[in-house]
Image (cartoon, rainbow, N blue to C red; front, side):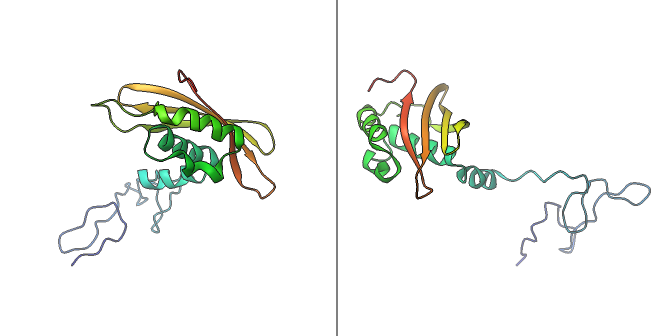
Length: 164
């Protein structure tokens, strides 16, 4: 059985790896060292799963994903209880029964396309996300506040076009 070595280069006949392309002077043409790191200072482009994991570490994306799951009817409102403050939970409880982000057939499951933030002061993030569902695009805005326990909590939620 052949084990993957993590290389993106095709295997050579006989199971070995092919040599990297080289210039006439013997230097590599792909700007990489033998250990796989680039020599031009740029980082290799991570795969989709790695980008998703990196996004999940940002509070704005973490909350955007969870708010999307709640507002699309995929998770119950009480799932957000420990992650929201009073007013935001009330806003979610009013919006969720309508499931405003639930896809209408044959639309696909909604996804967070992009989420940006503005920090008016330390410990506060005002975030805005673009939610795609099929060919429709929705706007989701929310405010995060960092508590004394250093955990982020959602303190306000607004969805463009939705009425609570």
